[in-house]
Length: 209
Image (tube, rainbow, N blue to C red; front, side, top):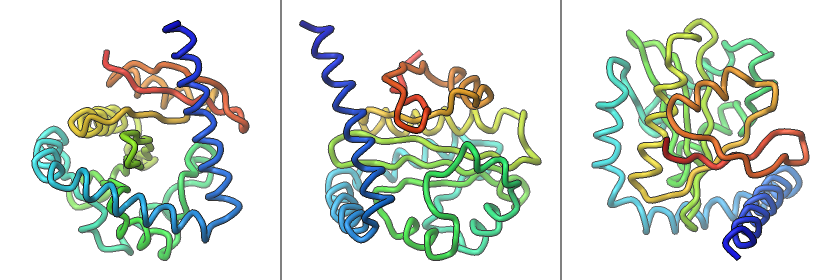
């Protein structure tokens, strides 16, 4: 029975993920409405916890400076994305990267996104796209000039700390060929594969080591 329930739950996660992406890509007006409603409900349920959790996350991120994108000038984040080589976006397409896209994300209370800075320069970006049902999805991007310095692993550890502190189950999708991302994740948590989704990526649940 427990195996059957586990399979049903995994199938439900896969279905929810597929529907959410279809709505986002095919019906942006409806997606914006869903995001607004979710952000409002998330804020009611979780906002009172975030301040203390983020203070500890900032400490964990040292020696880098961790800054919420809500407090970051929009043009800094837009410039960061524009400076990255095009091939990085083969793996990373969670949202738009133009100014209007970033402004919308900065105003979204359920989109917990941060940058890591080194000497005032953004070296990494990561987010937890949170839902009021107690689930969230991770994403991260390391500046190509700062790769292989442990920044991705650090962002994974901070992301997992935030999700666990909020008592949320966390998930993410990773392309089968993105070995570097898989290795970075496994230094912070255990990846439990759920299934391969339509575009060939694998949907994982993030679990404690």
